[in-house]
Length: 126
Image (cartoon, rainbow, N blue to C red; front, side, top):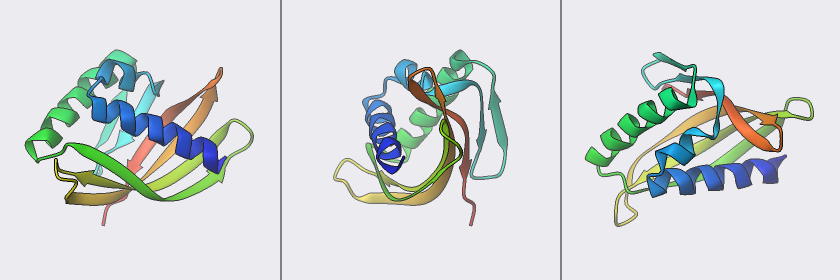
């Protein structure tokens, strides 16, 4: 499942970096839960709500200088045949690929039909 996780997050990253939040919101299950860096819980019952949420996140990060993301340090744990827990490090980069910040985040993915969907994501707080 390691290669499937890398493939999923390469697409996830590419779509987010493109700014196509309509396509990005389709990567999430309905409902979807995100535990944010401040431990707040964002519960999104529809992809439309996720679209609005991630559009706001994208705009906030752009104000901080965000232009690209990269990932590293994957840990993948299969949970049966159609689910996995993926933990990775995100690197938020500026236009010159300089590091703005990095963090660890975990995702529970579920195979829905032929596609992986994010059920939950949790930022690791320090």
